[in-house]
Image 1: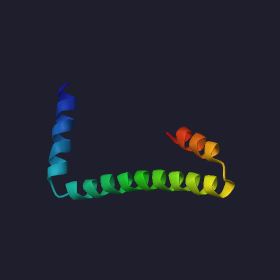
Image 2: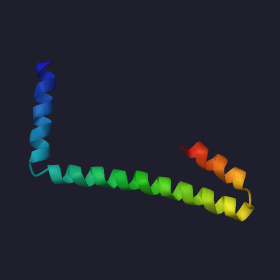
Image 3: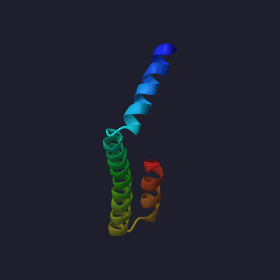
Length: 66
């Protein structure tokens, strides 16, 4: 238990120190990539269904994404 507490304190010190800015950038970048991937998948489903003219296929594909 003390090892875990020591690791958490070290992590808190790292985030509060100068290196914490790098961690913020990493978290922001990962969040951006996840968000943009979802947007691209939804847009691709909408475009595909619009081109094929099949509304049920669009709903099925978008439902399977989530």
